[in-house]
Amino acid sequence: MDELSTIHGIISTVALTIIAGLVIWKFRKRRKIIFSILFFLITILPVSQIIPFGMASHADRYTYIPFLGLFILIGIGLTKIPSKKLAIGTYILTCVWICCLTVKTNLQTHYWQNDETLWTNVIDHYPDSYFAWANRGYYYFKNGNNDLAKSDYEKCVELEPRFFMAHNNLGLIYSGKEEHRLAIDSFTKTLTYKQYEKAYLNRALEYQRIGESDSALTDFNAAISLDTAYALAFYNRGALHFKNQEIESSLTDFKKAIKYGFDHSLLRMMKYKLEWVSNNVKQAYIDCEACLEMDPNNTECIKDFDQLKSLSNHEL
Image 1 (tube, one colour):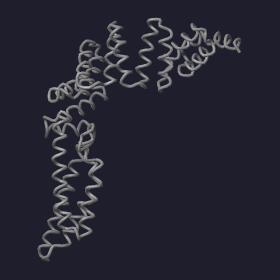
Image 2: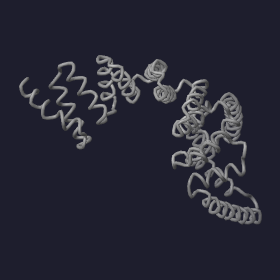
Image 3: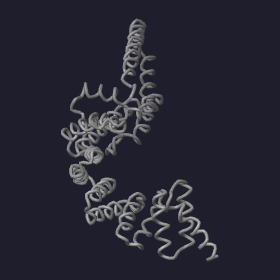
Image 4: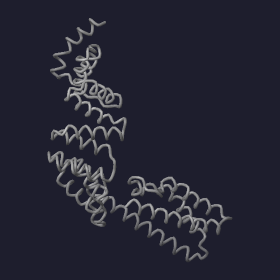
């Protein structure tokens, strides 16, 4: 998939460069023509996706500005028609062409009501487009229509087994259905095609749910090795250490989770208990207070808060 896109991109770029070079050489004394060609080439180059990255190559919006150069070139051509009758005929045909495009554009807007109508239309015209199935599946998935999402993702990976995100989202769907083994299989397929930190985290959570703590810890470690600032992975690994009564490891992970942007009342509750056990009463009080700010109805924090406050004041 990616290799073929790269080859097509290189061939197209070489062909365009040769054609543009010949035209520039032919009209080297016509500055307006040279300007319009160079404007197109210079503005299209940064977004050309010669080597495809992600899905941006599917986005035609990147051609809006570059096409101004081609429109200038077309305008120059229209002013240079030698025969008056031919010029009038060309102008009429151009107007008809623009009107047809306007009507077609208006019709096309009906398919842009939402992602479902858009990608359903694409699927109707290009049923072998794995990308279209994946996008409609994602629309269903984020709107809670998991059965429809599952069907579309399965079609996507049938057409393109290497599309790792579809496998990952299938795993999330299975997880929501509490089909943990199927979820683990899907996350494993994701990792077959890409070392994806979120898939490691997702699989770790599934291992935890079926009681395989060692496998979960291995996957938490793998996720963090891929993203050393992965706050959610630090939090969940810390929670696993907390469950196993590994105080220092748990505290270290909770601190990193907070440092990298994840904070939650449950995290603060576990952390203040660990700090308290470690005789860090002042920090335990700070964490307990933070827990209550996030969750004022947390009964455990309410029960411990006054005692921690008193102990903290005695330390001072």
